[in-house]
Length: 144
Image (cartoon, rainbow, N blue to C red):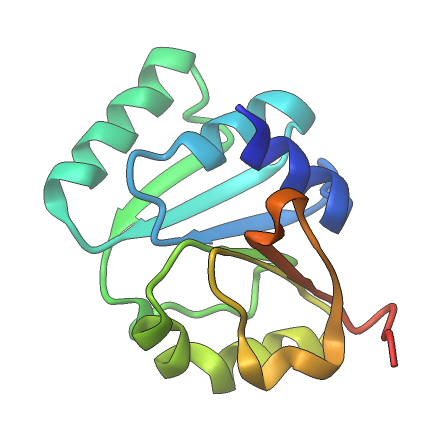
């Protein structure tokens, strides 16, 4: 599973981070990141069937102490505890979250978006992943 590994490397995820996965689907990113580096992960998903699938994956791997999967509206999620935010969302959903993502980056969080860029974060883009389908943003390193 390369996607989580690429993301972990590009945003330098450590066990001291708190990773929020917005649009976590079946929870594979949270599970892989928790297994790989012991990071605390909170996944958010709107679809109830995906939430159940993700929660079962967390139980199966014995990662309940590191991973929590929640069902809910992403517009109501408090992003302030997150030090890393992973997105697997449609451009429409990303557009709705842009202001909140900008606030998160400006306070020091790192953002990784799968498939679609976050236009409002363009000045903070620090790179792209393999095949140009990952976009990374951080205030620590700004490429002009």
